Length: 120
Image (cartoon, rainbow, N blue to C red):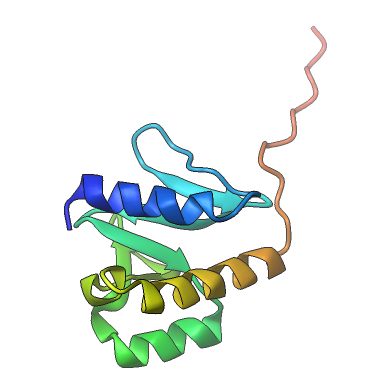
């Protein structure tokens, strides 16, 4: 699947969820409550954030689905194999797992708090 095809598919999945949107000018991602929950990586790869138990179970079946970005293993993410991307009946339940996990994550502030200005 090409990057543009994957971007289109990612957009279609995002359109199913009223509380998330596609973000990022260069590196496309989505987030909820300040937590990144999915992104398009090199390869191209669709990476989804799952719970620890769901990620472990997924990696047992798909050991090559480990996501590496900027030489770092993305510990909460799995790369969705092409076989699943091509099968909506398998992709949608995985997407739903990601959304359930995302809504359970503790909200994070999306902006850093401003530091007080020093008086001269």
